[in-house]
Image 1 (spheres, rainbow, N blue to C red):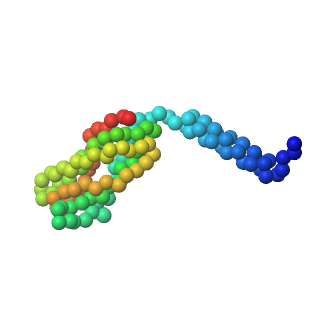
Image 2 (image 1 turned 120 degrees about the vertical axis):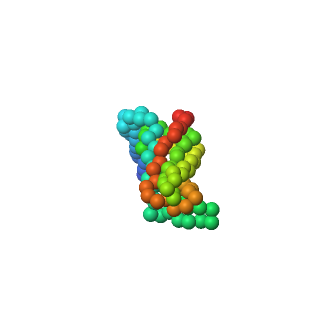
Image 3 (image 1 turned 180 degrees about the horizontal axis):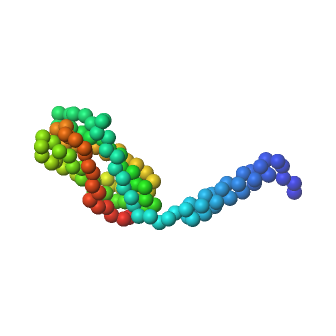
Length: 124
């Protein structure tokens, strides 16, 4: 029984797809260094804005590690009116290589720099 050109084309496309997926998985497995989660926070004070409930400071949390982090707790500290104020939040799940936008809240506009500390996280 002789096959037509369409069957041969489907066979070639299928073989290329399988080889591509296997190749990607091999390269990804070799490249994966097994690093733990590495949360990094970029605070965007220039984009901060006032609301009726206080001052909000947008930030971006990035996971540069090779594994996910669960229940990531972050604490932002800023000086406001001569006193130190803290804002704490939790990111439920942060997969490896992803980022999430978060917002820290303060009672008024921070006088200077806003620093963020990673309090802890759980490994899934």
